[in-house]
Image 1 (cartoon, rainbow, N blue to C red):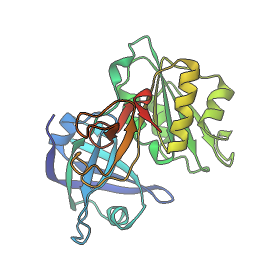
Image 2: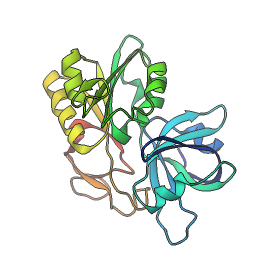
Image 3: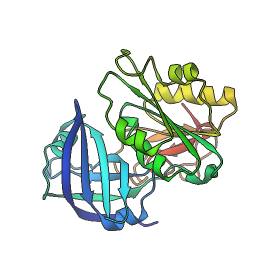
Length: 260
């Protein structure tokens, strides 16, 4: 799979929740190769911001050659993206990283997708492409349940948890899983590190394989700078130490392959 850099036409930018924005852009060559769990790097128009911003793929419309990115405004770069408008162009590099292994369960299998906060967007395309029965458990801070309707349309079942109890079950995603007695043949998770750590331990206890998508600050996004390494259980061929590059070998890992 080759990396493609292009100027993509923006077709929409909409606000989904407080600080959360959705952007659709046209990048046919990237969309043709992209897979759930991968990401792209977006370059700012302001030349003072040299490094690109990595953003996970939320939806991939291969027929239309379009990508949907859902991101949280976390700094000057993402603030710039949130203020862009249809008709403008943005420089994009992708598809990057390794995505979720969609072939791990067959048509008779049960997939459990778990997302928290800004880790929810990558689950939408994954839920569309997995065969078998798909259950999604999502955790929000409050009643701003962005992407919930889209997930309900693509999955067999969606269970919601919120920190303040204003939507679904009060608590976190593991509280919801235990309350609803949810299981699966394989788990796919994306979200903050404490959530992923808890899901890894739960998966080990339940003897269920867990694939996690790691979030990390990145610089180059292509594995050259070693700025986004995580500790692995085996020696990496590139660095010769127990590290893996999240942008290159990840962002998706089998949870038992890494330490966190």
